[in-house]
Length: 208
Length: 208
Image 1 (cartoon, one colour):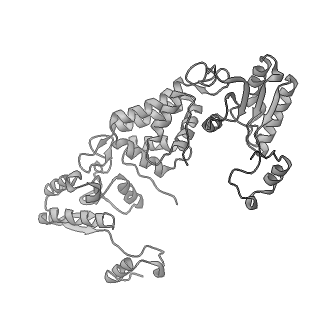
Image 2 (cartoon, each protein chain N blue to C red):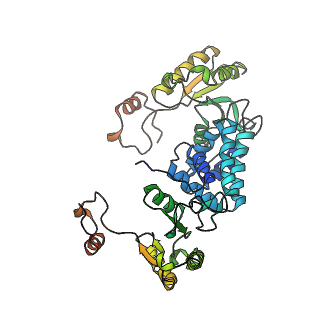
Image 3 (cartoon, each protein chain N blue to C red):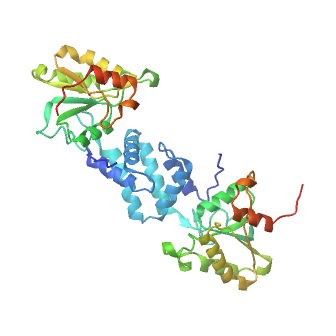
């Protein structure tokens, strides 16, 4: 339903315009947020805007993995205790955070910054694939190192994985992908055919 | 589901903390918004934060009606063509905008800044009722002026309306409230009993 807007104040209207330009924030939510901020102590609001400005102005991309970093290297690439010969390739920073949250991976990452998608006009040159190839080429004895392609299981993810595989297979590095199969706790009856089919073909040794 | 967070960057974490402190914005949405802002041109992000700071630092409350204003008076109170002897009492700024959007009201407003709610610890002294009484006392010939109590139809709204009525009835000003009844397009069969009952008791002359 169209909502005719009559702002009592230009300042309010401009703040609502700015907040409403964020993805997923509608005009009514933006007004609610603006009126909320107006009621907060000034130092809270300044802390909020300072944090946003600092992120935009001071955050950098890690020289190694292209993740968001406070300095030249991100905290993961700067960590000497991690396995720097095990590189997990992901689409974005959120994927890094999801994998880190599992506590099951002790290598390093490479953030592509997107996925190959001709429909969205994203090609290989828009991603950090060249940087990945250079990273792998700089490794000593690449045949004892490993790249994990941790990309989504949809067509775009598979296309990107295949493209990267072709770019790096010449270096002799081991290439793996995430295991696909039934999720833990999944009911067989409700699994989709493709997942169930792959689960049977790639069946694993039973470790009771 | 709990989501263990591992931020690659303090700057990112602080921005997510700040954005996530807004009402109705969860941690995951805050991360999505922070990563979105990080990808925007710096001047867009600064425009966003400047707008929010300006609103907080420079917006004032109208001397007359307590609405958000850019200067001493809001644009409605400053408008000489409006009827300053017809005062509509509302809970908040959003209500002013909703009524203005109808285009059916040509008087001025009085923003209470809340509603009497003992459960939330809001009493009459937390609202701008004293200011309303002073405004009405300053009117010449109050018996030819009118106050419209445009408050919600729930218990808190009714309580607040009754409290205000007792405060101002001594001035002789006419006091009215919003009409209650079936909404336009409402189906009789699905109307609640109370609304339908009031609609019959307060039936209006048919103007075909």
